[in-house]
Length: 177
Image (tube, rainbow, N blue to C red; front, side):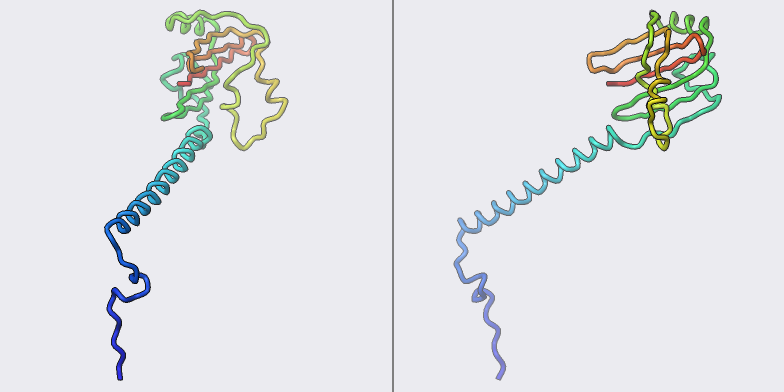
């Protein structure tokens, strides 16, 4: 003799009577659970994107004779990097004569002033990522007598331009923050 299947409502999980209040409470708990999971996931994604934007991979350095548009037309032996998007910046090291530098500064309305033992704020951006940063590199970032122009906004963004008259090397840094 074959056993008859019990009706669906007689199963264990349906033994208690489901009322509108119980059903509403179950739905609210599920909504609350999914809302908490969604908010937590959104927060984790936001933190991950923020970390990636700040610490993310640096673009490869470009070295040679190609001069970007944001450098003086007389710049030569150019070594530059730039990153676009959130946290954008542009940094370059190049050779230029002092007369050409002063002409370029005048065209842009920059007032150059002399600083002693000027420490370059952008030098670490020009280093290859594979090379370890040493004390020798830190000391190489100091220009004994530099011609400097610096315009910083309240968020520390702006332009920094430094020139070493002894080597005719100029350093350019522009950033949004």
